[in-house]
Image 1 (spheres, rainbow, N blue to C red):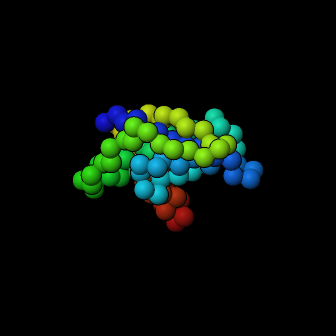
Image 2: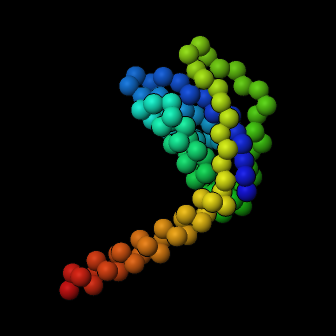
Amino acid sequence: MRYVYPAVLYPDKRYVGVKIPDLPDCFTYGRSNAEALVMAKAAMEMWLWDAENNHETIPVASKFLDINEGEILTLIAADTCKYRKLCEAAIPQAVNHAVFKEKAAF
């Protein structure tokens, strides 16, 4: 599925924090605005993928958000189908690596 949610970027000492207000506990940070946005997309995809897998209700995206001075409001798109394919490809590689290490130890 494809989703679009508002995200709020905010300065946090040395980093740029980013939160997705509509997705509880979905937040991350980066060293720059660009890195924070990339990390936010990944965090959103993981959050939404997990909710889909657990048949949880996906919150509706807010139409309007109030932000504080110094914060930046933007939209982030997430594609859980692409994320799911990445996870499915990564898990067999990780398992094969673990099996190889186990056999190599003998």
